[in-house]
Length: 90
Image (cartoon, rainbow, N blue to C red; front, side, top):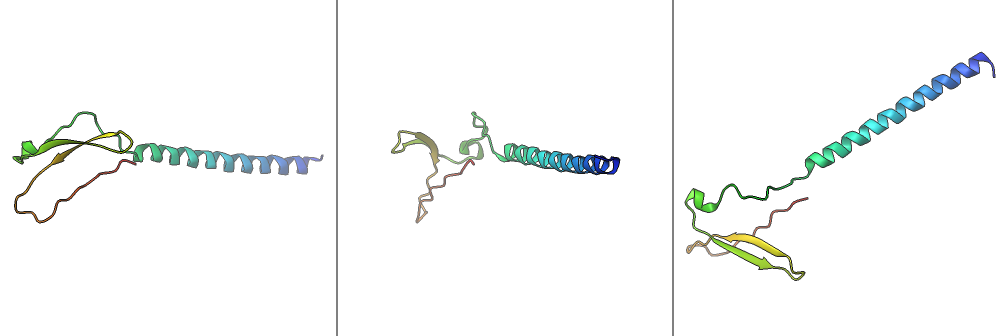
């Protein structure tokens, strides 16, 4: 192996390692954004409808797979329809 071939090999290896490092940094950044993008709700409820002067009923619904879901029912006697709203969490 002559000096020129060795020099080319070193340059090629540096390019390869820089590309590998760049891809690793991109992957780490994507994983960081993935972690930051997930909403983790607090266990305690900070505001209730009653704090805005709205009366409500605290209700619990049990699903088919025995998961208990808590919600609020806010009634309106003038309403024609009832809206059931589920917010999602990633």
